[in-house]
Image (cartoon, rainbow over all chains, first blue to last red; front, side):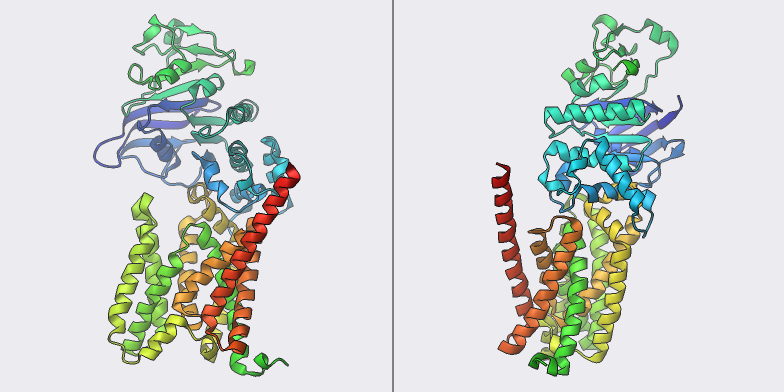
Length: 284
Length: 274
């Protein structure tokens, strides 16, 4: 599979002190990758860099082979952290919110047509919220608002979906539902997903890659075949195998998995590297 | 024919008032939802510096107000981007500068009556030139608002997501900012600098109490704004009240009324649900 997100030797700092230093990783087409790490290690900054909201101090970021230079949008769908909170105070119907996700399809200074409204309906249906389309988004629960925000992103048919802590402030049932929708998109519609999360226990089973940010580093350790053979593997809760990072200091002496990363919430001290689940997604 | 329509100055006042109330409601809706409710205050106060400059140097005060308003509005946008999490300070900084300048410059203006007419406006004393100016401006603002409705909605809702989707955020914001600045400077002459900021916000706040969508928020805001303007002018004509203040107070009455209606409606739907 081709790399759709590539970060090469990238460093960034808001001041002279670098938050992220010499970060290297790639996300392949069809991946469901998650970025985890302690508070303040630069996860959300990483998202801003990927979106082009801020520019790296050093190094390169490419999306679908093109360098990211601005918030121009290269087929990326973005679901921000607490997106629902912003929506709660906005007096718009769910339909109006989702229609805004069709901007690219409608075009500058043009008016939406019947096909666009049908597309919005279809996006609402895909998140199970079609019956709420005429309701004010502020009248919905946090989980429902997050699903509307996801429908808005999906209306644009993104090939890559970047989500910044989408499960924060959302009840457990809604988190499950959200992850189920994302899983469906990833498997059925081949949407590449990159999610920043603290909730690795919930998200981990759906992901095939876990990138750990620690002390500014997130070096990619795409394991060559030879290493994969020697890597410590164990069954994945949803059928996927977790392949242990051979370079990880936790090493294979104790089987740690995505959940372990969450427990320590830092995976980083020790590994600070990427863990790759060997797919088996179809079994999920 | 009712007495109010028998006077040419009142016909003109009603016509200009109606046009302004529609465009001010449209701009106000975007402003409120961009969380920039106080920008009207900053611009209207800054416009007074332009008025003073015009009166002092002997050119049309409206032109002075327009120039200072545009510079102030663009400064707010520029400062807002630099301040990040404290972006709301941009409005306060520009407003303080505007008030300071207006205060100092007004001290040199010989006719204080001229300057004061811009503070509270004089909608019943506007000239034919000013009426034509308002007409042209209204057409431009309405056209821009309709054509950029989708873009303005998206930017108001989530500026970053809008940029990611390819909305030319910088261009749309610049158009909106300039239109707002020009509207505020012209409205300062008619309803008054101190009142225009209220008219930009209060009808929208009232509309939000009962509207069931963004589109109906815009329509209700226009309704409140126009009814308040026509009602305010009528009341001021028959009861000898100050038009600007009467218009604003009427819109506040709408705000209270709509909030009560919204509250009762919510209570009723909760009961129904239970």
